Image (cartoon, rainbow, N blue to C red):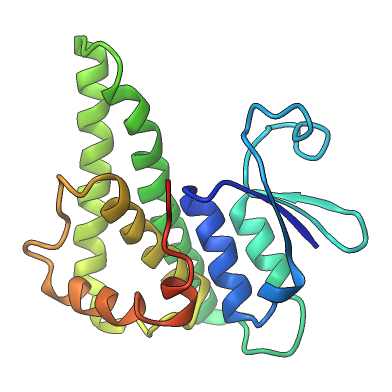
Length: 198
């Protein structure tokens, strides 16, 4: 397998964390690429990372798809529960973590641009989404279980991204349960081995 990646992408971190959790990391060749690289669009028309080329030559993109594909390989415990309430909880938590990243990543570009009224409103809206998601996670932090599912891995990657890019906006104050869970989760190999750089 070959993974097109950027070392600072939280979505790439999510894929790599899943690969580590599933014991597949050594089977993935990495290709560091900019999203403007002309070699990327033939593999992914959206020209985004992560993009995975499977051993069979299939091209997969977007972290939820790639993570579910990796979860279909091998015999290690599954990150995507097969059915029932556990599956829907894991998928909902994945969506919540992805939503934090979706609201946070583009905001970095907006901050660097002239701060007209529309841009200030957009930034405030995105920050509000992140705050609401963090409050939801604090309320259910007692039910998070290490990095047992795709939901917990995605949440950990989202919190790590906030630390990485928004250290000046600390998320921990007022969220002791989430802070305690994250301290334990970030010490586990899928997180400890994928700390972002750049």
